[in-house]
Amino acid sequence: MNRLLTRRRFLIGATVTASTLGLSGCDAGSESELTKSVLRLAEGLTMKTQRLLLGDAALAREFGEADLSPVFRTNGTTMPDNARYIAWMNSQFSTWKLEIGGLVERPVQLSLDELKALPSRTQITRHDCVEGWSAIGKWTGVPLGMLLHAAGLKPEARYIVFHCADQYEQATDGAGWYYESIDLVDAFHPQTILAYALNNRALEVAHGAPLRLRVERQLGYKQAKYLARIEAVADLAQIYRGRGGFWEDRGYEWYAGI
Ligand SMILES: Nc1nc2c(c(=O)[nH]1)N[C@H]1C(S)=C(S)[C@@H](COP(=O)(O)O)O[C@H]1N2
Ligand SMILES: [Mo]
Image (cartoon, rainbow, N blue to C red; front, side, top):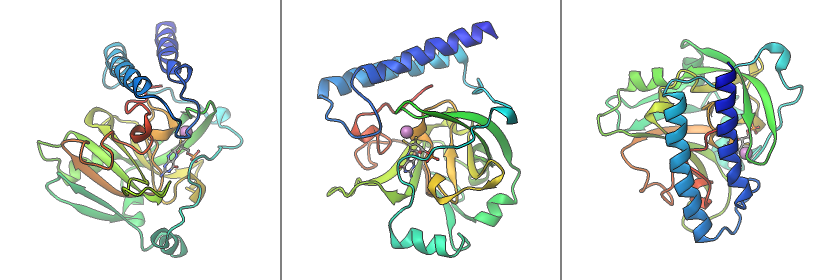
């Protein structure tokens, strides 16, 4: 226990350097190219160190009911402002479907009811935002690995990309849509779930209704809300600006280990 705590403290310490290097908050700063390349170098080391110390299957800490935060803050988009999402919302998400495609043998589309009928996992975990706040919440959802097994990943698949229904910024190159990606180690990790409930209640719009990713060993911005499409890919370079996520495309670490 103590050894684990010490390791976690060490890892937290390693992550905090991102903010001391000038990345404060989720706003796109004007980091220099040098800062960005230093961050990318440090990120490789952090991921390797974390995987080396903790192993692939190490679990994020889980808490008890008594630890739940009275209020779970919201951040980033809290109400996607586009016709497709608003139509889904007005139908209580009965017209929404999650698409799973890309490098899979059997592309599928699943309704919210179909997802809720599958075996679920519930976990009480701490969400850590890079802006410096945390909240403990109880998430219920479908293990991502189960869905990927069902869809059948092709051998070339190396990353899972999460396409969201919110446009965070109007970008002339079309890269304003929120998206995220993880590798297969995190995709098949037992605590990686697609959550449809927070604290025993249907996910609210502000928290990413109807479905959001929980990838518990990484920071808040990896927890993609408003999921619309999941894509298995061999390479992240072809997607938007090529760094694997909306904030990653703007200088943040791709492996945002806690
Ligand atoms: N689609 C989408 N997902 C997102 C964001 C966003 O703006 N859009 N913000 C991220 C950030 S920075 C954080 S801290 C968490 C906030 O989740 P919450 O609003 O449920 O607290 O969602 C993450 N996922
Ligand atoms: Mo965040």
